[in-house]
Length: 314
Image (cartoon, rainbow, N blue to C red):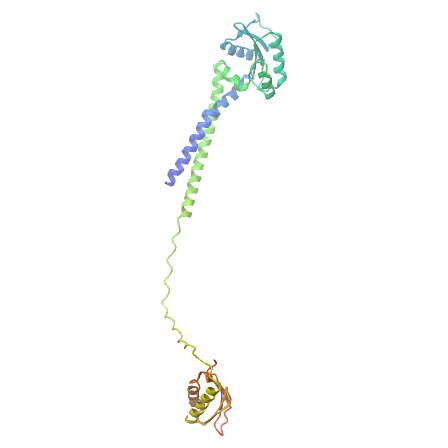
C-alpha cells in the first residue's frame, strides 16, 4: 500500500468517525444540557405551564384549574384522563437532586387523594433511592433526560433555536479540532509506516574492496615421517664406529673420538668451515646420532678456541 494512501485512509476514517460522534451523539446531548439549563431560568409558573402542556398532549388535563391566577407558586396539580386521576408534582430547578423523601411525600398525597398514580417532573436528577421509591408507588419520574423530549417542542421558538444554534456551534468547533487531530494522526501513521519499511529493507552493503594480490606463501618443506626406531646397544656402537671410520678418511680431519655416546671430539687441521659439513653429513646418516654434541678442536699451534656445535637439535 502506498504511504500516501495509508495516511489518507487514517485521516478519513478518524475524521469521519469523530464527526459522526460529535454531530449525531454529542450534539443532541449538548442541546438537552443547554435546554435544561435554559428551563431552569424560567419562572415557576412558566415552568409549570410548560409541563402541564406536555401532559395535555398525553391526554392528561388539569382537573380543577384555578379561575384566577394566584400569586403563590403552585407545584402540585391534579390531572384527569377519563375516570383516572393523576397527581403531578413539579420540582423547578436544575440543581435538584431528588432522593426518596419527596417521592414518598408524593406517594402519600396520591393515597390521600385516591389518585391512580403520580408524575414527578424536574429539570434536575432523581437519585437511585428516589427511583426505587417511585417504582413501588406507581409514580412516573420525568427528570432532566426524560423531561427534555416532552417539552422541547413546546418551548418558545426563539429559545429553542438559540439552544440548538449553541449546541451546533460547539459541535462544529469540536469537529474542526477533530479533523486537525485526524490529519496529525494520518501523518504519524505515514511516518510509522515509513520507518517500518526502512527497517524491513536491508541496507545494501558496499562491496568489499579488492585486496591487493599477494604472493602465495611458500609452504614449509615437508617433514619426513617419523620412522625412527631406537637402535639396540650393539647397533648404536656399530653406527658410532662407522662415523669414526668415515671421519678418518675425510680431508682436514685427523681423527674422531667418542667421549660419550652423545659427545664426539674431532681433531682437525683444516678450517671449521671446511670440515663441519662433512661431520654433519656422517652424523645425520644415523637418526640416533643426529643430536650429537661435537667438540671441534683447533689445529695444532692455533690460537682458536675449542668450539661446541650440534648438527640437529632434535
